[in-house]
Amino acid sequence: MEKNHVEVWEKLSPEELIEKMFERTDADGVLLLPAFFADEQEEAETLRCVMDRKTPDDCQAVMQEFRALREAIERIAQVSDSDGCLKDAAYAALPEAQKQVFNVWLRPFPSDREFDTGWIFELSERLDEASPEEEAYYDRFHAARDTECRRRLGDNAFAYRAVIRAMRYHRLLTLHAPDFILQSEGRALAAALTLLRCCKEADEQD
Image (cartoon, rainbow, N blue to C red; front, side):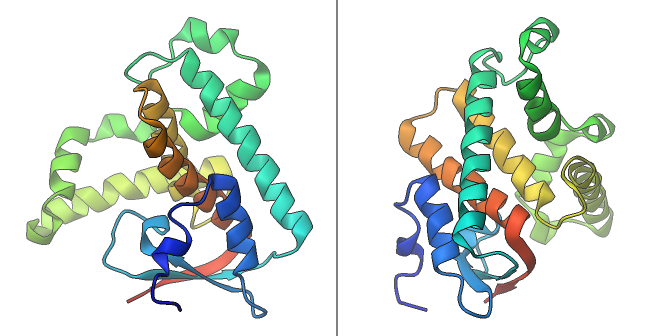
């Protein structure tokens, strides 16, 4: 891996990143990604992925799905509240395809009502110091979300990551985030979608 591995990815557009992921998958189907595309924990330097697709047609299929998803999220954001919520009337007025995107990718997690999400956020900032009871509560919260994401997108290890990235992109749009932030989150969503569709297994490498 070259010295500036992260720099290979960080200035790409989302579409260029998808192409790069296929381009850099080696003959054995192995792809190495920077940690910031793996998840939000940056301790690991890379994510090692074993990909099951690498043809130009597969690349174009993922690219088309990403563009359609991004466009739908952007249109939904236009009728969402500034806090990212979508009122019933606004939802009812959406075309069926955008309703489907909302239900799969953007609908709030029902299980969140069972947890103190404010405390979960505070706990995430001090997990190294959390008690066993706090860790168990935190794990139950994420397990419930993961179960819901797998229900929406299929039993896939990247389902949670993909949904969270879509939600973050939508939220940033409603906040009118600067273009460079949207571009960065768009890359993360593109990477998560590509892994969801094409990665058979993955492990973090120190």
